Length: 426
Ligand SMILES: *Cc1c(COP(=O)(O)O)cnc(C)c1O
Image 1 (cartoon, rainbow, N blue to C red):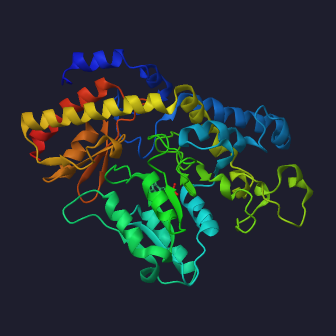
Image 2 (image 1 turned 60 degrees about the horizontal axis):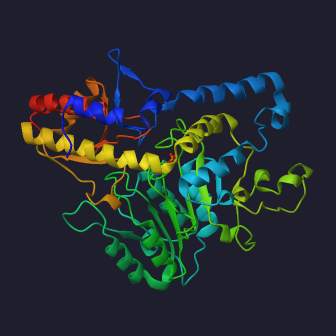
Image 3 (image 1 turned 180 degrees about the horizontal axis):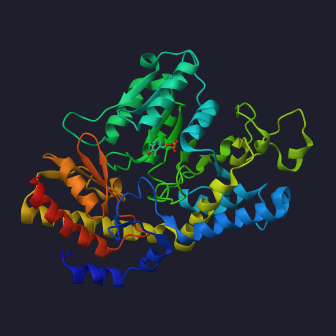
């Protein structure tokens, strides 16, 4: 149904309701030419309006200094609350269930402090094998911090031999195997390496039958797939702002905490003054009185300069809506896959797309496993202004982010890939 031609790609762009958003982002240049950017799954492009949001804070700081906390246009003392409503739409939550603070791994630590309470009969954690390194270190060190032993506590879900992706049935079987000893499931909602989307709802509900808590690392999922964290009864989740959400390097992370926990006084939140009852925050009272919402997990005076670009980006998500992004995401990812296969047929190429083909398990990323001399091809693409990313041992990840990728980008990428394959004999 697709065609690998410039005119066809242009015709898709002319029908693309998101095409005007491309102008809203700053693209880097290579050899004076705007790049084809496929690494929005690693660091999203800069929204032009982020500059305005940051400058606003800088100006308020210059002109108001301490008074900015209350008298800035967007006062700093509750700046983080501006995220709750718009971000709740992105992740399918109630506004009270969402907050923005710290960074992703820090937030997962804090959420584990609340939700991972090992006892002698209930202490096991299920995670994925070969998880993103930060998640591995997170879990290892949490286990250590509780004075436990990794191999007694952590059960890794594995892929079957010869397969690239997890099977839901295998994850469920692992949950059954661990049974009542299961305290926590903590997995990436989308696998960073393959781009596989996991069945968050099924896995969450299944593990909860054993009274386990279920948390999700949504680094690659937020702003990429449809999420219904509230309805799926997810216990907690966190994501970074700088991948699909274009919030800027290392900027503040989003958190979800289901409303069923907001008033639970038996849960420990590692506290700080920003989690304390807002009206009484400055009274410096002795007794900690956490806010009855996800904001009750806040700790510090929020990093306004880290929040400002994320707020600019969240505003764009509100304008566009996840369903529009997802509709384009599916079409442009399918087009990219088509173009890759078409080029492979034409010039040959010893590689395969290892991202699942079924639509429920695929989002805005294709991972291409190269069986030949991959590194050369990677270098060639980068030199020609195609920004992709390389994961050891031999995977190239391509994310045609719907917010700013054009179909014409995909066509031109195909032509560059063809030249690269001819030269490097992949
Ligand atoms: C990107 C990513 C992280 C990054 O964590 P930071 O704390 O923001 O550095 C963590 N986990 C996963 C799965 C990721 O994809």
